[in-house]
Image (cartoon, rainbow over all chains, first blue to last red; front, side, top):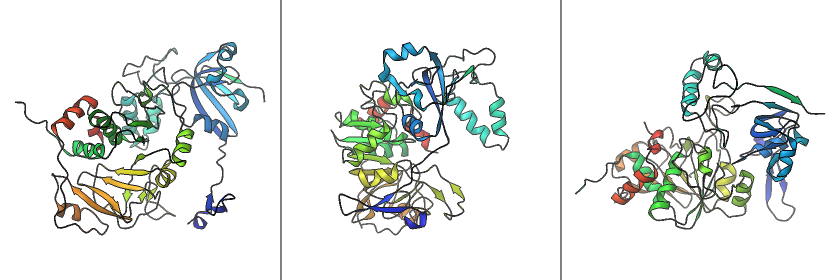
Length: 164
Length: 243
């Protein structure tokens, strides 16, 4: 089986077992939305990190999008909350509601009606365009985006290049 | 005298899953796992209050205010005093610290192996499925795996998988028709739900199956179980996966 998938095996150096060694994944980019970051790219994640920490370390370049941009001094008060250090981060985007229609704990939950509307649209070959153009007011108790103009759509407000 | 609450396939499936859980054991469920989520909540309320729940949303023994419609919802970390990262969960599972994991599958074969990867020939699949997530690692390393499906047909219970995504310590498979138990490496019918028949189970299972002459019937959901269900799943999310 491993050979047919192009996978190779290694001998467990401490035991008898022949183990399948899977090549590392090295994505070009990880795009990770967080509740709070500073302008240098230090990013806090509240609640569950899921695979965000792993992805930030696996990718060659990391783009952080954030609900709020905080002063670095504020993150420095509790550095243990910073899940992604700026060391790994290429750029930061201030993107309120950037996870919509997904959730960004603790700011807003999943917008299930918007997910269902998207799923319905996606059955149509032109549905993605319609979805991207659609106005999508917040729902399920989610406050509308603070950005001016249409509510719901995520909207980039600033891009800060970190030094390379 | 109040009449017994009504029940159907969603209730039978989650009740049968909940009964398999033991008090005090460590249980995990992942993404797209509404039925396991409800079954765990039911078991904790009825007979397993000290069950330890880990979820893909990171919560350890969470107390969600209401069961969400997605098992990646952050609500499944609500009330948790600690968040377990997914890296930590896999490490725990591989060192033998997880008693029971619920997994799903698009196809299940008679050995209890699963396919969550693709349908059709592997080189040119007709359907690309969501993928196994951690199933290939979890299934051989968890002490016990329980599979569930909200649908039971020859399309899903197949003689030969189009692709083997995961294989390992499957113990039970719960379907709307029956409960399978894996004995000596093969799935056998442990009990048939009262709403189904031996003939139906045979007709809707494509892998070879021999039924005992007096195949046991699953005990129908009790009044206590159904009442507990209305408490833990007042929003009836358990019905979302059923037609």
